[in-house]
Image (cartoon, rainbow, N blue to C red; front, side, top):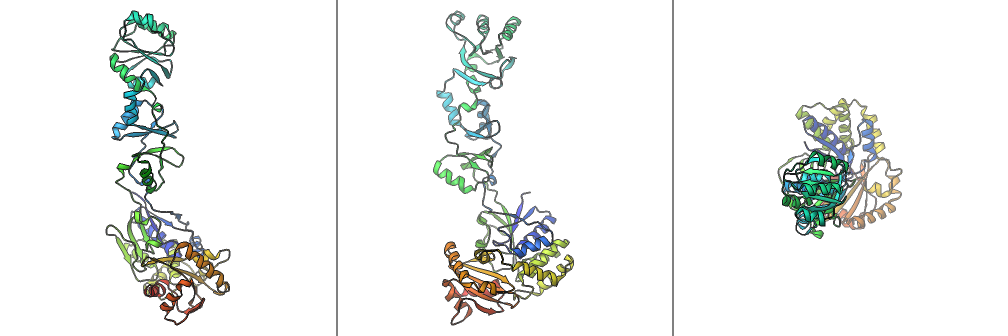
Length: 537
């Protein structure tokens, strides 16, 4: 069963990370194969939560774009450089393709053998020389081993098509001669005496004991085939090592970890159909053909705590979304077929997942209960946010008991860890919990920074504003607004780029605003901030 990735939004917070982990545990208990992942590094609050409950930080997922390895290409389809041309051709024919990658003994890609190259060899190639192995000649001619002295067979082909007298008088033979001969004992004796490299006996002719003994003494290799002289002469050239024909001037290969886009762009420029597939070590994994790119095994994903394209993983358009669990407004993500979409007006995604556990009658382990509790407390600002519902409070109360924690002490420590800014740059502080919304082709960036004391940021607000203007320009945002939410005072200070001033005035219904203006009771980005900004824009 193919693995399904479960993840929250970019700039992950405690609710998105813990809900991905909790949902993955639930799904796996139900018989699915899922894996929780994250799209960026964790903030200090989430790190504290996972460490406290002894849960490993999920792996990082860079993107879900379709990779070469997600395509049904010809896996493990390649031939080593020392197989025969005939063997390589037969492999090509079995797959009904037009080429095969050729590799070294340790599977390093050397080049590509095409049917065109084989055809050229058959039509215009030189058939008077052989550079191959004894084994290859046996296989090609379906021959019987009579005497084997050498593994490597290199030499010039001579066919005993003249009269014996002519051959004995005019044809010189030596250790580089490969003789194709039938029932011509005088010629056979002559060849053995001259210590030729290989004697190919055709038509089922048998050598005498004396001839065999002499051949062994003179170190002459011998094979016997049932084929006649014409067919043997025609076929023996195909026993040559395939490396003789490979075109290594155009080793256009793709890594199996490459995006499909890389191959499509390459094919547009090169106009080739066949591309060897290699791994990270350059070893051949098979062959992919442009004409075969039909079945794409898109990555399967489940989204939690978001349903906006801008907030999701790179390449989400190429993934197969199986399910969405969220508590935000309906966003911009669409699917090509019906899915399970569970969206509720509650304070935390973990509240919805808690309900799913109860519906499935699956027991929640204490450590999973602990991180789910943390996600609810974090997203509801310890139940002070206007997004908080009775369902959130009841779920958190039950999870608290399962986890066996001291609520007051634990929550205080969690928020203390989460609001630390020591050692962080201003850019890191601004972008750590920043969400981007698309409105009429405009990117609206809204950052929320939780704090127990806003003064340490407000004292440097001019520097923060300058950094926000820089980020806005670099990222192409229409506006960038930062809400500095004071958990103790239960309100937010607002910093913004100049482009946002008019929008904020309208959204706040104020005649004038200023940098660092305080708004009491403003705690929820999704319920109190985003809707008003959208209406204003």
